[in-house]
Length: 212
Image (cartoon, rainbow, N blue to C red; front, side, top):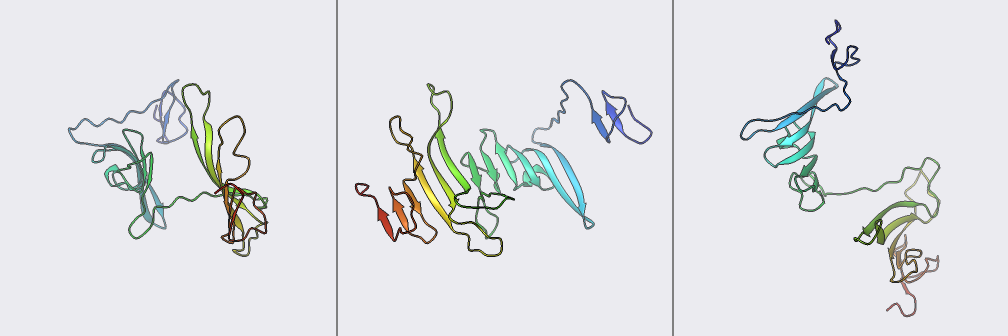
């Protein structure tokens, strides 16, 4: 169906957009038939009169599924997923499950953020990195260790005086939960505690008896 307004409907007689597909299982298949060719969809927007072009598609050169700002998927430095499922950000050749590569003269960085409109207070977790695993006899993934950054004071929005501690947790053998208290803590002032519950009077390197 093509309406007088130019709207096109496939499977519908009342399209609400330029192209409207309606089906119980709608699928769009974009297939390249050349010996060495790629397939993709291109998106162009205009910002202050300047075209901004992005693509989503299969990149022939790197054999990846690519998404990012580029004229073709072969030049995408945004997100690339290879045939084994490895994901590259800033690179079309990821070597690990997730590879983050910086651009020229910049580091590949990952930012973990907490957005809390009610305020960040002690001991809110700003972010955490979990190490989990599952074997055949387990019904779900279990946590073996994690690292967490926690606010060590009520944060303010006017200064950088936002004290934060970094905690390291590991699971113990047996039925007890070793993830309750941190094995090691690096406090906001650089003092380190091993095997201790973090306290205000930890100075330098504080170690619980028997930990070393």
